[in-house]
Length: 145
Image 1 (cartoon, one colour):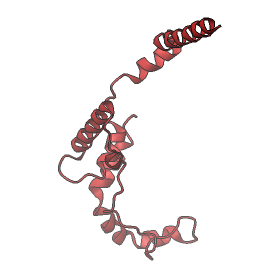
Image 2 (spheres, rainbow, N blue to C red):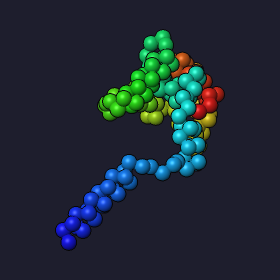
Image 3 (cartoon, rainbow, N blue to C red):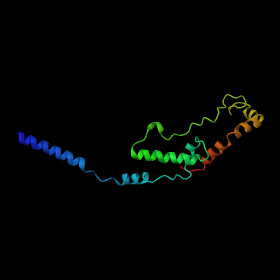
Image 4 (tube, one colour):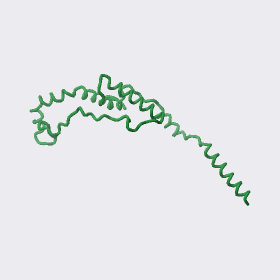
């Protein structure tokens, strides 16, 4: 009886180990998904990197965002990603909030368009401060994802 129990336990362990050691072949659809996501992304004129670059200072914000992205990918591949230093979309503190200023209004308010036209010169001066950021942001709209 003991030999039967021992042999059944041994067969169960061998069967379990064999099951762990072997793997089913991948489904065709799974192979296609792996192949699709294994392609390196096009980092030239990349919309995501352009959004991240909006929050960068300096003369080469896109290149800085690309370098940060590549460093993050390398850390992920090594399994060493520090979650405090993840690549994040920018919070652009340089852009002020004009919601509470009297010269601005909500477009659904009565007389808003005439109010904006009256204050056109002041609004134009304020917006000119952010021309470089706004033009970079508009350039992103022409990029593909």
